[in-house]
Image (cartoon, rainbow, N blue to C red):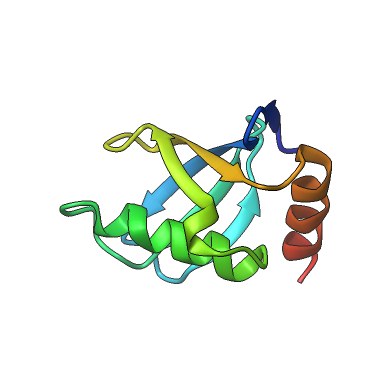
Length: 99
């Protein structure tokens, strides 16, 4: 289960990121984070942008709703997902992982 946190503007999503992977994918990580793998290399924020684009696509969100709030250069990241409750985000993540 992903350890989402409620926030005044939406929900905080913990992510375990992997840049330079074989394919773009979402998986549940054992540490309560969402494991996100992207093919983009980690240079000049390109991988972070690719992660945001992948999250937006798979979770039916707008890219403008997702903001990286910590971990810009770390594999452990936290994203603020605006205008969505933690319960709704959890349901979307569950549906995306089931695909």
